Image 1: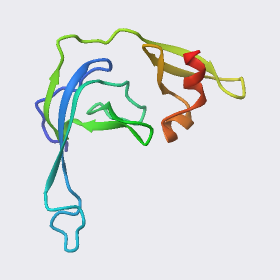
Image 2: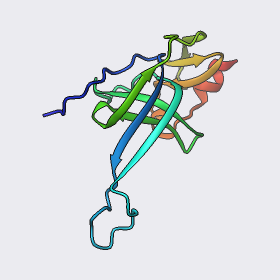
Image 3: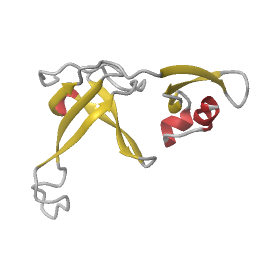
Length: 140
């Protein structure tokens, strides 16, 4: 059963500050190599909530990490949130979605552009690597 939380998941496009708390997996384990702290807190300030991935639950939301291609997003579970604040403005303007043909030419992928830059694609390559050719194509 899910733990009760006092926060409601933010909507895609909302600008939020969120602090999440995670238990260190190696804490208290003999020979654990994860450090002396039982919990780690991660803070993301004034970030725009991204559209959810198909595999995410309604109790999770996605924010950018600012760590580039290696770790572009963080999926945050409401159960791990210790602080969540929404900015006064609800949306950042300039978000649009475009359809880009697949390489076989028979189907299309949906690419999300924010202020002219590709940030998400529905193709498998983006889900696996966090980047794909469709993003560059949509930016043209």
